[in-house]
Image 1 (cartoon, rainbow, N blue to C red):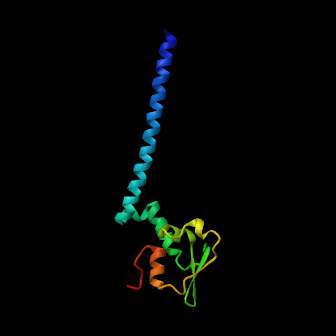
Image 2: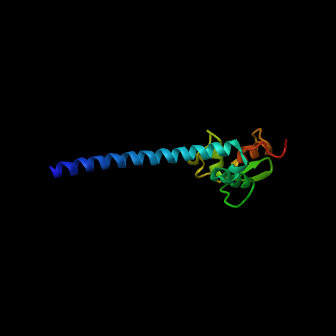
Image 3: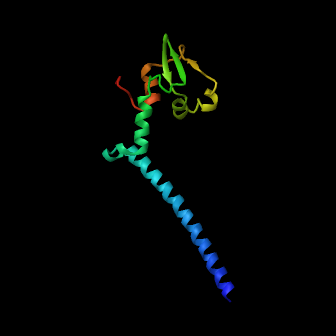
Length: 128
């Protein structure tokens, strides 16, 4: 009789653990969505969120040689770029496609510094 009670309690404990793990995952997903929404809402308090700080750091990398792993040639100018930013901003470029690329020659493409800045920083830039 005692063994049945122990088995019943162990089964109940296992179910409680499974429910706990599900709730922990749901909490993590909810916190992630909340952080994303706060960053998108651009509220004052969201400026301290991880995603907002990350976006600011990535935008500050524009034309910086530090951490640059790619050069983009536009006309006679070379612009320092970051493969992960291009991969995140375009369906055409992926990290796999850019893995062995050191320079992109876009001299013949109808690009401007403004469009490159927009792709890199996500903002409309200073040129408007």
